[in-house]
Structures are given as structure tokens and as C-alpha cells.
Length: 244
Length: 244
Image (cartoon, rainbow over all chains, first blue to last red; front, top):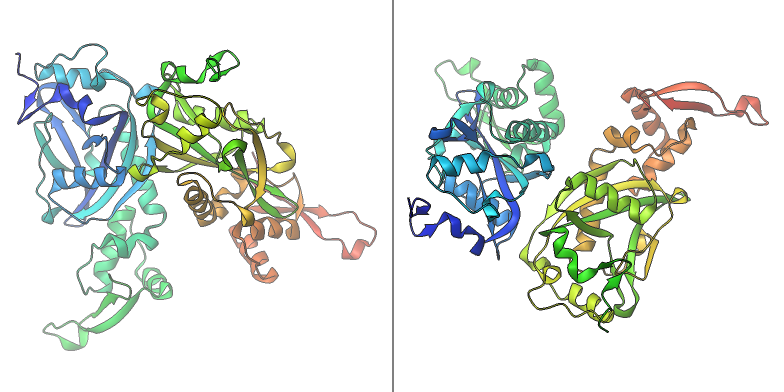
């Protein structure tokens, strides 16, 4: 059991040499798959535990860079729109979950060890296309996978609340974020855009009021008719005016 | 100089015994005075430095409670609407400012001391009526006072950016926050409400469009005519429907 904490070249019990104490990052990585909204979860098989992907901050690393690094490590994705939405710091966050996860792997840290300390966690969310990701587990987990947000199991600590709050923040000003989120192809139909909105908002929207709203927002421009067999029934294609 | 760091019963150099490492709170306390928006600043006379009021988090304290404690210590106010708006964690935040502030007071911490470490700061803002506050300096400052937000001096570290971001967040969904902010008297005229909006937004609003917007938001209810000499010119008084 002496080397149970070794993962690659780094001993997990040596983490305090590299990372800031008392502070962590947790990420709510939301994804689309077939008009369903999913969230990326880690699984700890020996403990039946599920958790959001997270990590620590290197002593000389910007926190936003740490969040991007964690997102890349878990999904393979770079340059994704990532938003800091809340910092979670109730003392009730400190529970036995980390101890259990470590124990299930045969790692027994000393009682006053860094990993068992109180952590304040900075929450970030991202929104990605599931098809573009390669979910990858971290040093302590046994699996990393997409789970339908309507079927989220009980997660460790306050991670269920984190997802709720991330969804609330995302939905609150979706209009402003839509372009930055970069989820649509170069050109798209009004129906495709409506499906994206409905999936994120978790409810149906009336077609006429949706179209009026998008036109009023003045964020899309018409490109051309989509080429299908029936020319006169082909829907119009749009693109974002401010696409980066 | 041996006891230069002593303040009351607590030695500032002993702070690491009580507080979490690497993490601080900074507060953007905004206030109204005669239709002007002010911000509460601390002044360090020996260094010409100005800063936002801030503080550390006790090892067993919720972060939101810490923010309320700091707000109360600096203003005397309890039960004020306080919103966490962003966590600042760039490595460039670490500079010589704390060292200079301590030096100007004759306090020389060891090089690896807690106070000189990298801090990640959780930003909170509050909005209060200046007349209800009693600005009080903290253990390291020489003054605590209201400054017009149009005349903010250069502050230490990233504190000017913190104010900008707090104002942006506050203005972004002012409508939803207006009631919670609890800044109006029990009853008020439409003109008084408009002045509040204009002061926070930092710009004039057309009277007719403001009134239409407030009526459409359906948050106020008409109470009665304000009693003045000229009865037929007296403005109507309103109150918030959901006032807590």
C-alpha cells in the first residue's frame, strides 16, 4: 500500500507542494447531444460516489487558466467559453467525501493533510457539443461520462446545488451569451436555433414569439435559402452578425 | 517597534492562526448621497494608498458570513443586501502593496508570512444609504470614507477594476435587484424612483419611457396622492408590491 497514492510521476499526497491551500475549482460542463442537455460527471466506483470535475490551482497559476486547464484535461477541448458563476464557501462543504474517495484507493493521508482541509470552491460552467469531446477521468476517479441533466444522481458535497446554480446563471442571460457560446454551425435555420434555446431553457417556446424575439435582438442576418429538393419550402439560413 | 503589529488584543502577525490562507474578501460598498453614487474607501496615510474594505475568513466561518461581518465592521450596518459578484485570482494581484502598508506601520513580517502570500479575493458589493452608515477604519488603515465614484483615486492592486465590475453587475439586472436593495422609503414618487435609477445607471432616462417600463414591470402599486399645498398638482405616491 506504500505507493497507493502514486499516479504517474506525482504522489497525490505531495499535492500541497504544488497547489494553493484551501481553494479548489469545480466545473459544470454542460453538453448537447440530440437536443438533450447533459452534464459531465466523474464516478468513483469503489464508493458509488459521483462528482463534478474539479481540481486545484497551481501556486503561480491564474484561476481562469486553472479552470481552462481542468476543462481541457477532462474534455480535450481548448478555447471554450467558460464562465465563472459563483464561489462556494460554506463550512458545511467540509465532509468525509474526500477521505472516503482516498480510502477506497488505499490512500491514507495524515489527519491534518491538505486534501482533508476545508476547501472553498470557485464554480465555472462551460457549454459544449458532446460529439466534440473525449471525456477523460482524473487521478482519483474511475470514469468520466455524460449524464442527462434530468437523471443526475446524488453527488458529493454541494455539487447538485452547483449544477442548479450554473443552469440558473446560464439561463438568466442566455441571449447575451449565445454567440460567445459558439454552439451553432456557421449557418443555421431558425428551427435549429429554436431547438438550442428550448434545450437550454428546458421548455418549449412558441415559434412565432421566438422568431419575433430573435429578429428584434438584431443578432442574426439572413444568408440564403437552404438547398433541399422542394425549393419553395426550403427554410432560410441565418448566421450571427457578430460571429468571432 | 517590537509591538508595532499589536492592535487591541490581536497581533496582526498572528492572523495565520485564525484565518484561511490564500483567500480574502473585498467589498465594493456603494452608497447614495444627494443623488450621487459614492464608494467606501480605506486610506493608508503613510503610503498615500487607497483600497476597498476587505478582510479574511475565519477558519470555521461561511464566506457569506465573513462578507457580512466585514460590511458591518466598516459601516455599522446589519442585514444589508450583499451580492457576491466575482472572484479575482490573477497572479498579477500579488504585488508589494501589503508589504508597504505594513512597513509604513513599522511591521516587518518574515518573507514567507501569510500576509505577503498570494491571495485570491472574493468580491461582494452592497448598496446602502450613506446617511445610515458610520464609516469605521480597520486595523491597518488610517481613515474610512465615502468617495464620489466619479472621483475615485488610483487604488492598490486590482481594486479599481473590482469597482468597475461591481457596477457592471449591479447595472446589468438592476430591475430584479431593486426591491431587494431596499433603498427607497416605504412610499415614494415616480420621480424619486427615477432619480435612484438614473444615479445607479449613471445616465438620464426619458420620463415617459421610465414610467412605462416601471408600470410594465408590475412591481409598484399606487398608494395615494402626496399631500402638498397644491392638491391637484400633487404627485402620486407608490410602494413596492413585494416589499419585504
